[in-house]
Image (cartoon, rainbow, N blue to C red; front, side, top):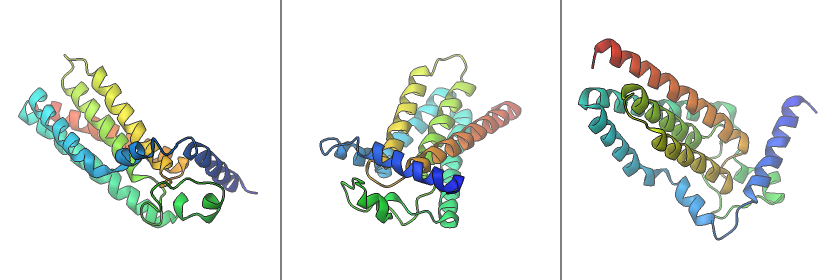
Length: 197
């Protein structure tokens, strides 16, 4: 067995273990967290607060960086999914036969590597936190940072709990989103400083 096959097998076992930690009473919470549409009002509120706290010029620059971050993470993860063609756990017969919980049945399109939810939420979380922190250093945004980090982690875990992603899908998605979010946040701050916004 090759190293890659061993990694994929380990990923399957870890995913099954995490997925089976859930139970019917908490499944609605995982589905709620996994529904990306419900987070649009929260995104809009955060963007509004950015403009309010940073002023319209800096705030608008950071808002545009957040939109760019989410679009980039979403589109690039979609391209990788199409190229890698790794089945989601809910479409994997071995996973289903070995006890994968699917409280809401089959979720998502056929392929799942890597997770768009994970890359989008971690990208948004880091880009927005750094957008506040870098452009308004007089204030402490630790509470926001912790809150948005916990939200990103819970959304990411929800994808495993409902059988939509392997653990590896969300780990790679989280790392990818974090890198993109940080890069865009620092680039935006550089532009804000150079343009004297």
